Length: 503
Image 1 (cartoon, helix red, strand yellow):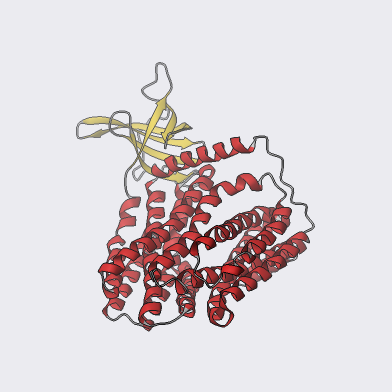
Image 2: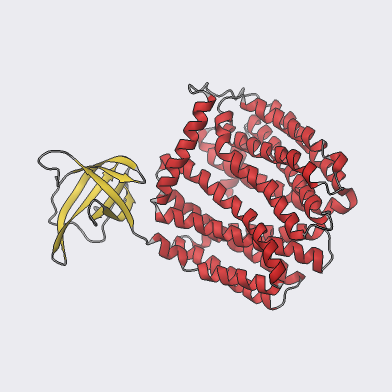
């Protein structure tokens, strides 16, 4: 703890980093207040002919879809404009656009709300991506990790605080008051960003904008192919996506119950978020206790099991306290699912693909809540709240064994051999996810499997990985095991390759 505090103080010695932190935190607090405005406007002040669930679905769509669509392409623009100017102007644009909502606030005019709200939320995604891009220029390399951690953690807390405070102030201030409060915080961030001494000018890219966009889209396709060829990473992302889908159902259902059954206002949504947020804080602080004790896929399974059991117990008697308990437990177990899953993805994907894969991860993380809200509209019409909560619990329990099974799925690749007299012996490259990667042969041998002699290779790739591959169906090889080059063991296979040939 002392070491972490000293490193944080070292990062904060940078005047420019402190200014960026003020800019980022004020922006994210305002973003939380604006989210409270959207929830109040679209859910709790919705017209009588619109269901509460439909209002939540619309709010999720406005808040989440821009995050998914703007994120992967934001870097193309950030690499071409002055980053300091982006950080200074974007909050002012957000404030100006938000103020156009004042005349319609509180009148339930959804269609007039959407376009300005989409601009405000999309600009926030663009702003946060820029803030992350400039950090390496503001702090020394040795302080970059703690600076990222400090900016990320405090930013999340400020968004959470703005949302909770906004929901509690919605009744006394009204929708107009929430807009004005959010709009008042963003210029503070603009002023702080403008005072950053570093010019933060990007290197002028060689490719034109249109070519850069095409390149980004092409790289996303390559990332998708690599992800499909990596079962541990794909299974982890699908597991987190499924978790977000179930959390989305519970969130919508909770709002519906508090509004329609308990006749409570937008402050009840703040209490739900507060309970879940408290759980996330506890879960984040405790997830490290599992490290080196439980395999990462098993940690995810344990989290799914606990969430499922608590949801089933809560389904017996759905009330305000049990809803808040479920929100807390889902928040508590969320880091237990997300952190190990993130680590599995990072370990399973080569460094040059991680940015593209995590762009997909962002979309897979965000979009399920929109789908969940849409599905919940139909579920509420046909099932009681108790049955829906029980269904969520059963789905959590059903997924408990999935990730451990998924990470054990067989991985297949193709080998390219040198042409010539030894073409049947010496691989020159391995093809994974459509990409051909050069390899060096560390060891090889022939094995007898049920009277059939098959080849086995230990290969070192250009990614600094060692792969143990075993001949399978014609033209394909199964990846038996994979490890980094620096692992001290002589071979990654479960059995040594004594007697093998080293070409």
